[in-house]
Amino acid sequence: PVVVAVVGRKKSGKTTTVVGLVQELVRRGYDVATAKHGHHFDLDREGRDSHRHRAEGGARASFLSGPEGFAYVGTWSHEEVALEELVARHLSDFDIVVAEGHKESGAPRFEVYRRAAGHEPIYGTPHQGEAPYLGILTDVEDFPADVPVLDVGDPDRFRRMADLIEAYFRAAG
Figure 1 (tube, one colour):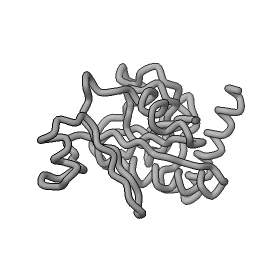
Figure 2 (cartoon, one colour):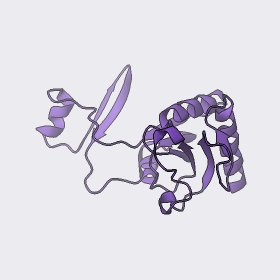
Figure 3 (cartoon, helix red, strand yellow):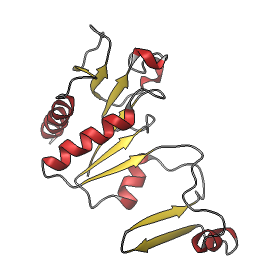
């Protein structure tokens, strides 16, 4: 699948951006999955059968499924797996994967930067990495960038992001 990341500092608006972008991509007919990078989350609670499979039984992973949905819960056998490998292993049936976070990946990306979040942007710093930027969403007028700069408050921003994604991947073949 096509993989694109939405990166930014904490409380910059990444989740709102991912939700709006996914809605636009689904509206265009794409089968979309998301991949969220997080810290200290626990989807499988102590005392639940699936938790016992891993905690007491020693299983490294557990797949929970039912009529309402499914979840795959596990622990790493080594260091954290890269986004590209996660997509290849678990999300290969989708058209597009929108990742929230995963700023260490090589996925083309948008950065969400809000001055009010109190942090510096990632773009233009040594932390920017080598991944291509598709655009910046910001509340800063005249943000200095060599990529498209979108107003983070523009109601049309998700359509414009989807247009940029389609153009980028069309050009890449």
